[in-house]
Length: 241
Image (cartoon, rainbow, N blue to C red; front, side, top):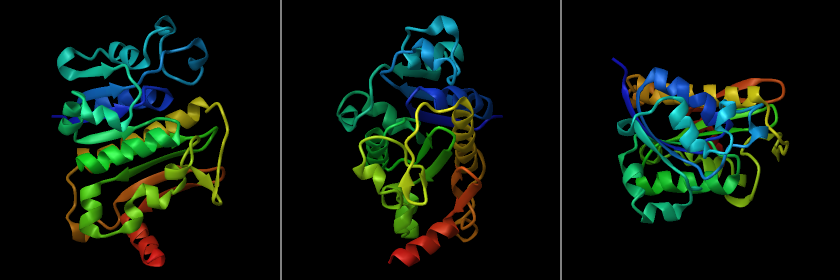
C-alpha cells in the first residue's frame, strides 16, 4: 500500500509538471496546487503539458492531465503570498504534511519558507537555472530540535531573503541568472525533489542518533553533483557559530 501524503505545491510550471506524476506513483497523494500562471505555447518545449491545454491555468491543467478527482486535491488559481494564510486557503496548509515550492523567483520562495515556519510544516524547495538544478528540505520543528542554524535555508542561502529574482542555486558564491531553463534542468530538479520527499515521508524516519547522514539537499552544478546531509549542516553550523 502506498504511503499517504497531503502536499501543498506552490508553482505549477516546469518542475511540478515533471514531479507530479512521480509523486502520484510514489504516494497516495492529495495535492493542493497553487499558481496563477496560464499555460503559453512557448512553455511546451520545457514543461510537461499537452498542446491542447494552452490558455488554461497551469494548476488546473495539471489536475486534469493526471486525472485528479475532487477528493484528491484542488487547484488554486492565484499566486502565493503569505496573505493567503489569512484566508480560507489556510485550511489546506494546516492539513499538509509538506509544502513543495517549485517557483522560479526568490520572493515566492521566501514567502513559502516563511509559511512553513508559521505553520511548523516541512518544506521541499526545488530550483533550477539554465542547466543547474537543486532541491533542499527544511523542517522547522526538526531544526529547533537539532539546534542547527544552517538548517534554515534563508541563513544558508541569504540571497533568498534579499534578492528579488533568480534562483537559490549559486556557483562560487555568485547567483546564476540564465533564462529559459532547459527541460532537463526541470527534470533533474523534479527528481531531486521527489527523492527528498520519498526519503522524509515515504520511508520510516530514523531516530536522531541515525539521522546525521540523511540528505537534506541535492544539487547539480556545471561540473558535479553534490549531496548535503544533516552532518554537513552540523559542520557548517559549527563554523558559523
